[in-house]
Amino acid sequence: MIEMKGLIEDEAAWYLQELSESGLSKNTVMSYRADLNHLLLFCRTFHLYRVEELDSRTLSQFFTWMQKDGRSNATIRRLFSGLMGFFRAERRAGKIGTNPMQDLSLEEVLQNQQIEVDRKAEPEKQTITAEQVTRLLAAQDGERLILKRNRALLMLLVYTGVRTSELIELKVKDVDLISGNLCAGSGEKRREIPLGFNTLRAVRIYLDDLQRIRHLPKEMAQESLLFPGRTGKALTRQGLWKIVHECVEEAGLPDTITPESLRKSLMEHLLEEGAPKEHVAELMGTAPGRKEKDHRQDTSEATSYFAGA
Image (cartoon, rainbow, N blue to C red; front, top):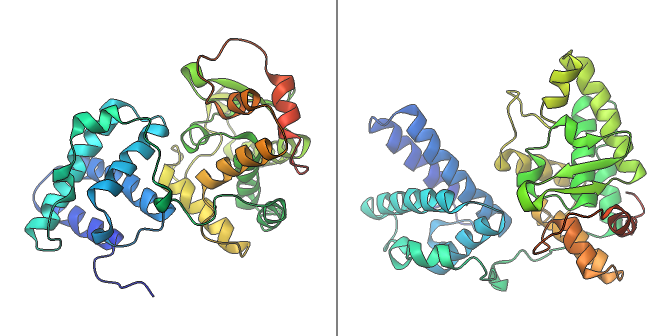
């Protein structure tokens, strides 16, 4: 049983209320909220519940985690400043004994991009089995648009290796329904990923229903978000985490399954089945010094290792 005192989510809500009452602008408070949401997502992913669990080592791992997700140095600097303010407020209010951010150096944080996240902080279960994938997708089988969205979203996470940050930024035009390819990522991480028959079918069924509701001209529809949030704007990482968490709960699966663990599962299953490391790296968008060449054959063979793709 988790002790309720000092829960991170409650402390974050308290701090945001303090900021609101201090006279800061609404936009400034929203910026602090976005920073804290990143921390909350990290804590949920690695099963951290209380502020006291966030020591300097764990916070260093948080920054490394954000860097591995492709966050820029500017974002890391803003996060560092925002969390420094949060823990200072916790310290002033007597909620914690010491400020863990005081033991961290921004310069060192920016230089430690290659540090591996401590195994102790990793979720207990990092992979999802083929049987669990079947249960996860079966729980989202239905005629309602939200079920079709969830099924398409989950299949892209399970079978393509896209990052959370890449998925929420996908536009309709990034899915070529004719060639059956998905374009994901940006810059050197931009890549073309072939979709399996069932994944392509799930995305097509979802898009057909979505377009009927949107009533957008073809050109506007192509530029629109593939998975918009309730307001029509892009999903946040927090919003995506919530969708996946609810789907996992509905399927009766362990709550250790997250968007990140689905991506990790694909990589581990492919390597276990003997897929070439360089091909897996291309699929996941982690290959260093990627060259401009067609990897469709390589990745199509890799993605076929999951029969349901």
